[in-house]
Length: 225
Image (tube, rainbow, N blue to C red; front, side):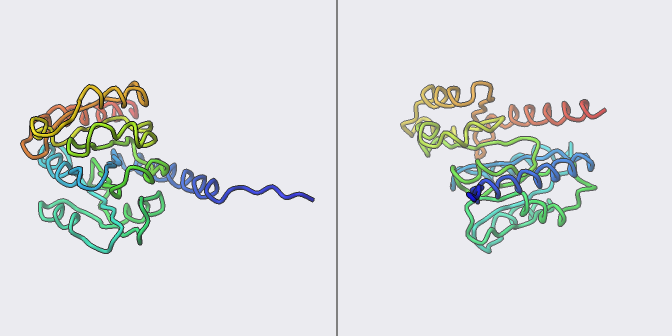
């Protein structure tokens, strides 16, 4: 009798998706909106998160889950220093967070007191695209110094996002970066995605991002009533 083999990867992703659904339901029951932030190393994820926290400090309570491949707490410490609850997850060398890791991290956050949970995924443009974490939205941060060809080289991660943040726009005058070519690559992969250019360093464009985020949070609240 021939046996039917289910690929191991398929099993892993199926189990992950089931737990991601549980994560999403649990966060919904707590009234917490959640974001999965992905990017390559050096794109400015932590600086962007810190600017977001600063912009929302008088509007909502935020908690952060930090993912890293090594047992370091550098990014989580930066978040904690500004008075925000932060949990560091060491992936043990894995190139992404998964729903199991996020479920464990959520247990260490005071979700009953939070309005927004931000997840800083591992710096990688490949692995995180395959793993649903149970968040409301997925965001990718690109940065000007990375170059304008990334949508063409790493297409999968651009397909499953609701917002593309182009960071470090203050460097546009000094870097060979074709903004229209970059946007064209994204639109081919994800026609409806919102593209928000900004600079976490200067703050330019952050108001537009905060307005975009608050609109999504309010839409969810109204939908649940």
